[in-house]
Image (cartoon, rainbow, N blue to C red; front, top):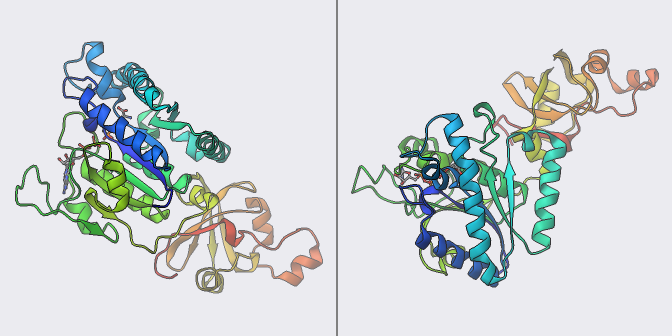
Length: 371
Ligand SMILES: Nc1ncnc2c1ncn2[C@@H]1O[C@H](COP(=O)(O)OP(=O)(O)O)[C@@H](O)[C@H]1O
Ligand SMILES: N[C@@H](CCC(=O)OP(=O)(O)O)C(=O)O
C-alpha cells in the first residue's frame, strides 16, 4: 500500500469514561493502532480531544462542567494528563509525541498560519507524532474552532493529508440518530455531504462529546472542499487504522475520487482571512473572473467599500451578489483612484507597477453558479 499522510481525530468519548478518567483499554487500543500505522510507513498527525473529559473529576466536578471557566480549568489539568499518557504509552514503540495547542488566531493571522504549517512539516520530517488540541484554557468562546472535528478538517487541509479519519463512538453516519431509532440505516460510501444529511445528523450521544454527528459532517464538508477524503467511524484492535486505510473500516467513507487539493494561500483566503472591505465589479469583469479565470483589473471596478491596505483580503460583489474573496495588490485609497481606468490610461499615468487589483492566484470563488 502507498505511504499515506493521515490525520486521525479521536473524540472524547473514545478516550475517556463518563466518570472523567482516561479509559485505559480504549486509550491503549489507539496507541497500538497508531504504532501499527506508523510501522507500515504512514505519516500520522493526531487531533486528540479529551482534555476537559479527562480533567474535570480531578477538580471535583461531578460531570463535564458547563461554565467557560470550569471547562478551561478542567482542560488545563486534563491536557497534561493526556499528553503524559501519550508520552508514556508511545515510548515503548519508539514514538515521540509533540504537543501542539492551537487557537483560532493561529489560523486567521497569515504569518501564524504559515508558521503552524512549517512547524508541523518539520515535526513530520523528523518522525515526530504531532498531537493537536485546541488551546482550550486560553480560547474565548467567540474565537474557538467550534470543536475538534473542524480543527481536524482545517489541519488536514493545511498539511494536504490523504485522509482524515474521525474516530468516534459510533460506526458512521446513519439516516437517523441510531441511538433513538434502532432501525436507522448506515451509509457506507458517500460522494459528498448534502443539506439533507445535515438535517438528520443530530447532537452528541455521550456526556463527554461536544458536537455530535452534525459537527462531523460540517467538518467533512470543509475537509472535502480542501481535497481531503474523510472516514467517520470506529474500530478495535491494532490493525483498525490499516483496515480503514484499505477501505475496510467500520464506518462511512466520504469524498469522491475527484477531490482536488487546494493551495495553502487559497485555503487561508477562503477559510481564515479576516475580511477588510468590499469591491464592486461590473458584468464584464464578473464574466472574465468567473468564466475565463482572469485576474481582476481596475477597468471593471465601480465601487469600493471600507479602508484597507495592500495585502488585505476583500470580498468582491457582482450582479449575483458575493462572488468571492481575494488579496488586493493596492490599498482602498489607490483602488478608488484606479477604478474604471483601462490599461493605456494607467500606463500614461505611470504610477502603478502592475495592472491587477487581485491576481488570479490570490482569488477564491465562493459563488457556486459557475466553474
Ligand atoms: N444520524 C446520525 N448518525 C450517527 N450518529 C448520530 C446521528 N445523529 C446523532 N448522532 C450522535 O453523534 C454521536 C457522536 O458524536 P460525539 O458524541 O460528539 O462524539 P465525539 O466525542 O467522538 O466527537 C453518536 O454517538 C450519536 O449519538
Ligand atoms: N478541546 C476539547 C474537546 C472539544 C471537542 O470537540 O470534543 P469532541 O466532540 O469529543 O471531539 C477537549 O479536549 O476537551
